[in-house]
Amino acid sequence: MGHLQAFNVQEMINKFNIQGYIETGTGIGDSLSYALKFSFKKLYSIEYDTKLYNKAIKKFIDPRLKIINNFSKHALPEIFSEINENDPYLFFLDAHFPEADFGIASNRYQISLDKYGSDALPLETELNIIDIMRPLHQDVILIDDVWIYEEGPFEMGNWSERNKLNTGNMTFVSEILENTHNILKIYKQQGYLILTPKESKK
Ligand SMILES: C[S@@+](CC[C@H](N)C(=O)[O-])C[C@H]1O[C@@H](n2cnc3c(N)ncnc32)[C@H](O)[C@@H]1O
Image (cartoon, rainbow, N blue to C red; front, side):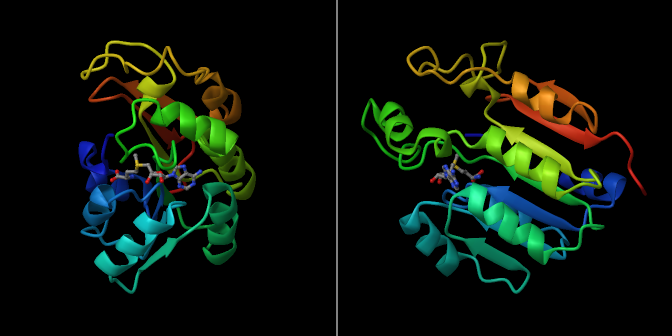
C-alpha cells in the first residue's frame, strides 16, 4: 500500500489551486492523517469496511472532515452533491479488495474479488463517476497501486498476487481521462498514476 506522503501535496495545492481532498479507501488512516495537516477547506474519506470506518471516526476528529461508510460508487455522488463544482479537489484513489488488505489468509484477495466483484476493484467506476460528475475537469487525481494492474520496474518489485488474480490492465484510465488530464506513471513504491488537469483555470 502506498501513501499520500509519497507526494509533494503542498506543491499540488499551490499549482492547481486545490481546495479539498477526497480519498477512496480510508484503511487505518495513514494517508488521511497526513492529508489533515494541510489547509484543505474540506476533506472526505470513504471506507466500505464498517470496522475500519468506526475506528477512523473515533481517531480523526476535525470539523473539515467527513468519513463515509459506503462503497465509493455510492459515496462519490453524495460528496459531489455537497461540494462546489468550481473548487478543484485532490483525489487519492486507493480503494481495493475490501476485507483483504488487513487480513492474513493467503487467498484473501481472491475471496474479496469473488465476494465483491467490481466493488473489489472500483477504480474504473470511480473514474467514470468523476469524469461525469466533475465536468470542469480541474481536479488532480492520484491513483495508488499500479502494480495491481500491470507489471513494471516498480521500486517494490512486481506484486506476487497479480498473476493469480484476473485484475485486467489500466487502459481504461486513458480511455476515460486522456482528453482532460495529463497522465504520468511513476514507479516509486508500488507505482502511482498522477493525473493533472490539461487546462488549469488558475
Ligand atoms: C489500501 S487500503 C487504504 C489505505 C489508505 N488510503 C492509506 O493510504 O492509508 C484500501 C481500503 O479500501 C477499502 N475499500 C475497498 N474497496 C472499497 C470500495 N469499493 N469502496 C470503499 N472502500 C473500499 C478497504 O476496506 C481498505 O480499507
